[in-house]
Image 1 (cartoon, helix red, strand yellow):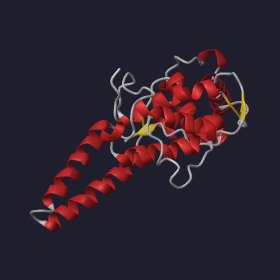
Image 2 (cartoon, one colour):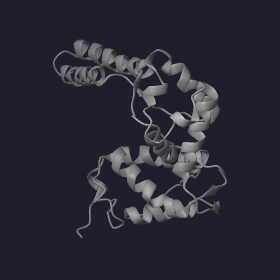
Image 3 (cartoon, one colour):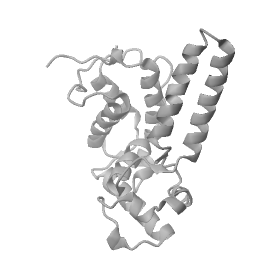
Amino acid sequence: MKDFELKNTAPEDIEDLLVKVEKSFGIKFISNELTHVQTFGEMCDLIKSKIRLENADNCTTQQAFYKLRNSIINNLQVDKEQLTPDTSLADFLPRRTRKTAIKRIEQDLEFKLSILRPPHFITGFLTLLLLAAFVGLFFNWQFGLSGLVLAIGGLWVANKKGNELDLKTIGQLAVKMTRENYLNSRRNPNSYNDLEIEKILTGWFSDDLAIDKSNLNREARLN
């Protein structure tokens, strides 16, 4: 199998993802620690070596689902029988009360879910405006600067006010919780499952960096 290189991925995108990894797994990369990491497999091994917790052979995604289900039952008075991994989030998060309901669940879980976004047509329009304004700087700096301020401000407001669900089912949300809040999603946050980590990281890197999973093998080079 030919090695796949991640060096074509923007370095800042990888850095942003590694910040999320630190938060999720409760670790901290020290200065120059990643300099000698050459492949995705070595990255996974480094991350696992830094999680100095009790190893427990149980499924974090399943535990995340149970935590989420209990929070929904307690805060939104939804019957337990109605909640399965395939249950649509929209079924118990109607648009009118969606923000308030999600805030209550987040307070109960003690971490952000970050599952709301503005409509795609709004972010698409504002992104095009941002690009047009950037180009406009070379022709009329005042016009370009005004466009940049409008586009950036619009994107900020849109993300703050967005009320569209970014996921469809409870199961998908449990997977997101497992990735972005791994330890807090476990029944015992002082434990981890060593066998899960590489699989979680593969899915996370693939989704966030738009890399085909078939290319993201242990030999995939980072630089």
